[in-house]
Length: 166
Image (tube, rainbow, N blue to C red; front, side, top):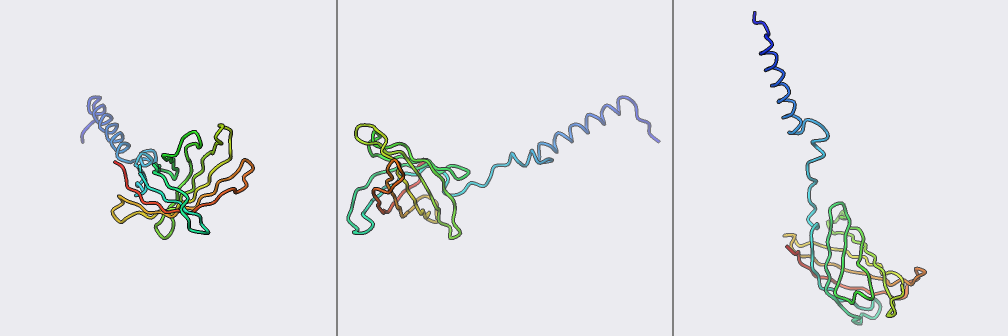
């Protein structure tokens, strides 16, 4: 029968501590599992798009622009475009993957009159579809300009094509 000496007891304690630390680092607790990155959704990232807008009823073209959108982890989005910044703020909103694989994106931004006074908000709804390779997108857009009392003063529909940046 072998006896424990102070030296062998210290070695056993050291080895046990090292094993516990290794288990912790390799996922031995819920804290370690929380450190594992969530699966990245294919829409996440930075995109550049071209948008064409038309009157929803007549189909007449009402303008277009180039836009940038960042789809962030957790379902938030920010967007901007090449329209004069004196007339609008940056768009902020949310995205959510739909059951059919498309994405429902809702954005809002502040609008300003030519004199710089608040003119209300712009509400945008985009239905985005990614290409199978995840490097390009197409979307349909509906947008409404709201006055300062949230009354609709203008509506438009549109289409969007875009590509991932970076």
